[in-house]
Image (cartoon, rainbow, N blue to C red; front, side):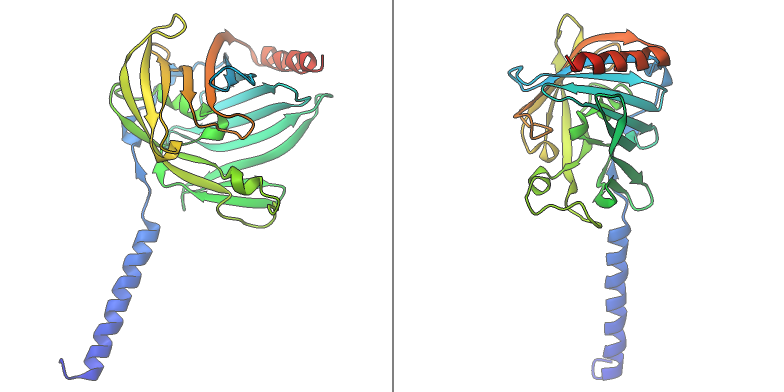
Length: 291
């Protein structure tokens, strides 16, 4: 066989076929996951609850008010009031309790007259594990390389609500982090047209390690360290309510938006609203923001 050119050619073609098949298999390979570390417990999500937070830099500067309304056990609505802005940010998120990730986000600006102006939407396609941002007819797909995944720029809101479903809250675990590439978005050359990769990106995994029990703002909490490539290899901390499982404080030197130089999220209070009560709250916040 060694001296038969035809046999060598056939073997070569077979080897190429094997390599191509293996390459296709690698492309189709599903992302890694720690989803088994979570178990959905519906009693941990109470519709009608509103969590009020203050977002700021680590030193408390540039504060913004963030209110998260639990509309249903799968749907969140978030109102954000930033200093110096006449418009309010309004974002909705749908949580998928199979991937323990937000599989759909929609964002708007609430204008001074109360009208909504769309700022785009983001959706997960589980067939190819793409998470795509849609803005003004343009598409910015990112491949999800680890589940659960969360958007840091969304103030880790979905992570906040997934955290309480950990099977063992004192064991280390990882999540994937997806975020905009702000350097490219803020570049003068950026144009929101067509399909563009590398605008919305998978930043890597973040590792969360239980540090110990530590009270925060008078609340019994578990304290965690968060680090890893998904957080630019910088270290921060999360204080989580032992009973409710929600964030009481989150501190990290990595900003989740260019308008800040670091990230701090601190719980200010919890209320319970009916749907009309939540809508009235939004109206009051909008009118207060005008003065």
